[in-house]
Length: 159
Image (cartoon, rainbow, N blue to C red):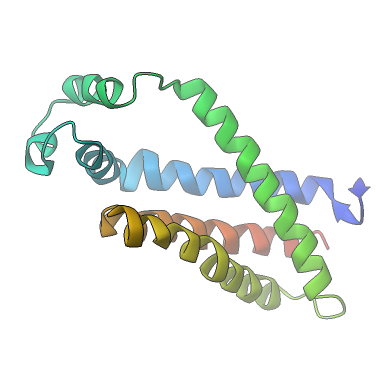
């Protein structure tokens, strides 16, 4: 399989797609309503209870009031590129840290530590200093931890 710098390209692409799909499940299905409501309330569009009562059409309108330059296609494309970069760096780090002992559990465990130690703690700054709702921290953290671990498990098959 094709490798660049010792990293399996197919593994990175499959892990990227899986990580991206975790985001789809989190933000498009499971936590869509709560994440949208918390984000809109944080932006000052309306209070949380009012937002939760909005129709889907009014929510979309409120979203564009809060974020007039929002472009879903561009956001999804940039989100995929960001995920690709994250997974590529994860693959490089895991390859270096697990040389000689690359098991599914070592990959998953290290990925979880990296997610918590770097990504979740970085997300926490918004909660600590910018009063971002704690609910958003939990949703975003869950997405990242699960995304990192699933990506690492996939990468472990391509080492």
